[in-house]
Length: 404
Picture 1: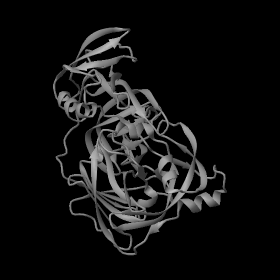
Picture 2: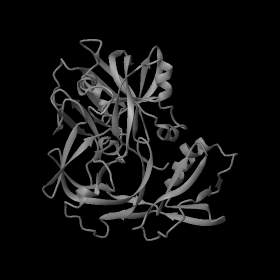
Picture 3: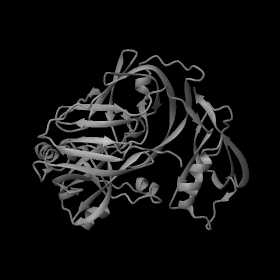
Picture 4: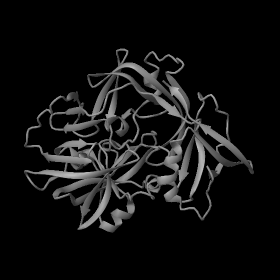
């Protein structure tokens, strides 16, 4: 299945709503856990490197994305209507593609995470249909849990066993044995920031479990540091990013960095993706190599590495296959120009077959996406047929080691 960067980072612009600055600040800091003392385990599903947890509202269960990069929790319009919530205020938000929109704020009286309840959760209205469509074959997406809830407890994320454990802030967070410490930069509200340093040049990145990618940055950072386009150390192409309100295809440069510091932890031979007009994010593809303990109260993040720390590499086909579940279609939108077999291709193409699988109405599209296509992607070559300018065209996709 094609990995699509689904960036749902939310920045709040205080004082831009219909109410006063004071009221918006008060709203941002409302909410608390019902129990004074608790420790709760919460299993999660990791689908396409997104974390899904089950929550309970009014005795009904819903699937929410666990998103440290969302400053407030998110609800779609249909769920807001179902719950009968009343608008409290409005704010301006900016998605990771740097496009803005004014949205409404609501307060959810009670939401339960396993047997632990949170009261008066501030939620922003967000129509994330594109995100929901991508997971139609996997899981219904009903909302996002943001860090305005998370800040009220300490959290441990065990990616290996797919388990979240959280407990009240009254208990001291003890540093796990053999763990590394990252100091988070936190304000009263907003995202947790982590400083990445390359060649003595620093840049703040958001700690973002709502981002399914690795490490992504804007070209503004790449221009500050010494990046040499050495063969085998970088890849160039175009990538489509889905944000809160739209999708954009942007230039992408992927580099292997010999040495960099993430929050004071020295890492070698790691890959960073630089993209046009991008936010600076560290996502689940990076974090899932660790067990995380988040001490929001003291602005600390503990990392326990349970996988061998080795140099990154990057292998890819010359083109990237995109899918659209509602229309049951595949197409080629993104590509790697540094791939030796890359040739320009019509972006309006449509894929009609993949290795003998005819993409017609008789094909179980979800079965194909979830099982057949991932297995085909394991092959070194992939034969597809596209329709370009009204004519069928055979293309062989071949994997190539773009970054050694």
